[in-house]
Length: 167
Image 1 (tube, one colour):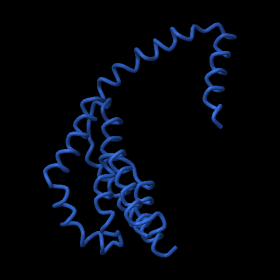
Image 2: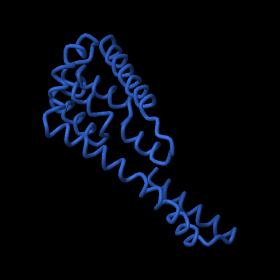
Image 3: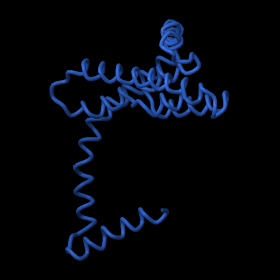
Image 4: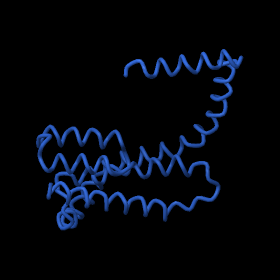
């Protein structure tokens, strides 16, 4: 398994050599096409990262979590993963760190850790993906796709926590 990627690269280079393709020139051409995309995406990603940090540092995320805690409990979402449910749409790496903390605190086989893992695995970083996908679109109608994505993530979390309770 360790050799899969090196063998894949070697195969591509050998195929290019047989077809007489200039690999380096092709690579440089591809990078030139990627730079404008990177420049168009960067402001959106920076905005999502700053917004996430501002919510955390200002205490707004804690206030939102306290407000939503009774709703989460009514929906079967353990209060211990409430922060993960709020953070996951914004930050994948922050969510990974939270899952790691939850597993360390409650144990890998606990219901809370299983719910955290299901929540992490059943949703996506909605705002990050939205920033990437919609950065190149001229007409930016983001409200409906983001609302649907957030709702889908919530339903997946509720259903996942339900399954963790009965299994």
